[in-house]
Picture 1 (cartoon, helix red, strand yellow):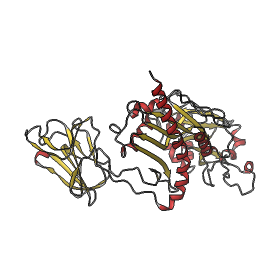
Picture 2 (cartoon, rainbow, N blue to C red; picture 1 turned 90 degrees about the horizontal axis):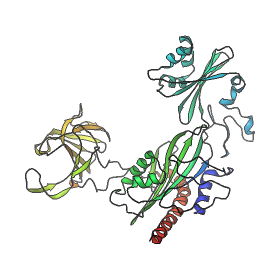
Picture 3 (cartoon, rainbow, N blue to C red; picture 1 turned 60 degrees about the vertical axis):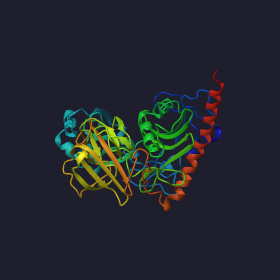
Picture 4 (spheres, one colour; picture 1 turned 180 degrees about the vertical axis):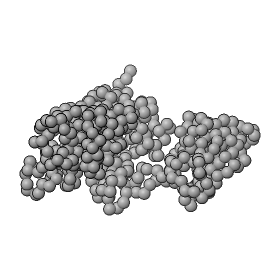
Length: 475
């Protein structure tokens, strides 16, 4: 596993001094310390948590207003010319440093029902000051969208006059409005954040959820992991005890150590008879998706299920005995039991071709998604307001609500998937994928994927072997 650790270090720390420690993971599981020569992590604790984390260089923005200073990755600070020393470049945070030295700071937490004007009024400032702050630039509009629990920092000069406002608008940026030459100026400044690339590995011992939680992943990451895998792996049917997984994700922390964000970067699942690898790649235009190593998108253009259901009350069956009629007749869809009134969503974007009452179907909606694909939703209690035949709907848009109309023994959605005129089982049918990676991004993707796959591939087999040896040694 030392080779994988070295690959992780190369991936995130080229040109960086090796840090000596990292913060613990979200749920308190141990994280391997990083040394200049990474040591192999112990596998004795398998199938419990196995985590490793490596600090990443700070992110930098393109040169221009609000850019961060040069980081360890060698990028220049805003305004810095080639060959110019980095400390000669003046950043927005440094521009008013001498003035800030004499400013007092007051942190204010936004309460329920608060507005920016109410906060300044409570702090003893006039409505004229509110106007001056909000007129400082278009960035100041963020102060009109404050949420309870947010924190503002008010700056005061020696005479107690308002000198500025700082507000973290998102995990990566802070709004700074400061007084310069008697007028307020607003700009967004990159926050001084710490980023680390973490790896969690584990063995499936029950459900994927429980196994991934035991490996140190948060609920949010486990849900994201399940969504990525579920289009290609039937998580409840294909996984077996002894299957292994390896996950790379990025954690972003504030200077205080507060965890601000986690982002899944890559996944490898070694299931019985099947291996699936997924790599997150973002194009220069900001469009991100997960792809297999050959550039195939893992995103499906159809949702597998169009409703939040409790159980499958009746499966797809071409020879089912009808629960009301008592005769054998094909059941060409799947019944998804859910409480009456549960929203039903369009499985994919398309056009409404049918919205009517139809015999045993009760209230039904049919959508045409392309020349090949149609979906049908039956036994609805009511339709979405304004839904009409011929209208276009988007994927995930509410089209109706679960009911018990027609020949039905209880509230549920009868859902059909029709491909090329033939009914298919919605639970097992191969769903269409999004477009593959564009050719113009192929070279950048392959370089990016190779680094991540070096880590995932080298460790997954070692985890499997170690786990197998442990099982063989059990009495």
